[in-house]
Image 1 (cartoon, helix red, strand yellow):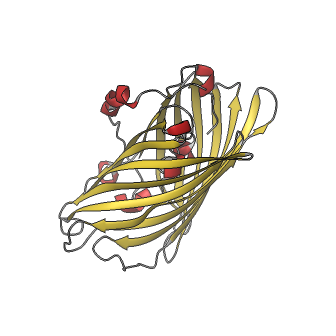
Image 2: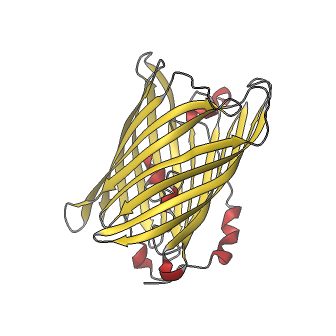
Image 3: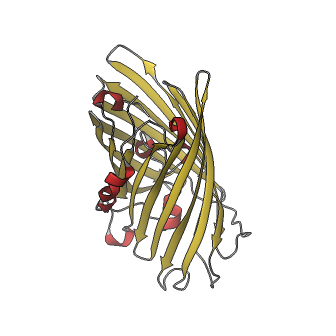
Length: 321
């Protein structure tokens, strides 16, 4: 097995320029709970689950942006880059980090989260236990929360089991969050619990199917009142059916729904495609959203993904999750 690439030589990758686009007609905080295109997690579950760190025995770089076709009043922006790899005795420690940015006219959020995991080989697969602890900065103008700015520490954890064909992960990426200072008001946040799983099934030697599912529960709170629980918990389910073609192309269909307590449910459908070339991959997903009660059609959203695995042998980079 080849050794992972040196992290020191990858620092320039963090100069990746975020390509920004638009998003759903909702607040930035609410919009994040609907960022459920499984396209962005197909080869990169690190933002979803810190135990994914060190998933492959190489340094892996990932990036995505998420947006929509909307007017300036509905404009919001989301981008992410991550880097992770393995180290330690017997290459059983995963480590890396995630940098995320969200913006809309009245609200900004920037978060930096280092991640760590410990891998345990098991009969029939391997188990990883991961943790993350980082910092987020929130800023809103006078139209939202009276112009409140916050900085908070966040911590999360997860487990991830895998073998050559199947994976399943459970995570609470922000089960702990505390502001560094108090202020009037405070941005609405969502504490999430995620279950993410998938498997591959060979159709022929050249084609195989990979269904993946993401189940999410999101509970709202505010940073300056952690006991405040508005009665609009969100439960979401998303299914992404992908077909790998000759090891070079991936096409998929996405369907999902979010049920909001005492609110308006949302449905989404979408298509995705990805090109695999040696260690490099590039993908695009298009998603349509609507609100089931009001029959309101929301702006179509799209996701661009980019990834690279620093394997010495390109054939090692042909992975399916």
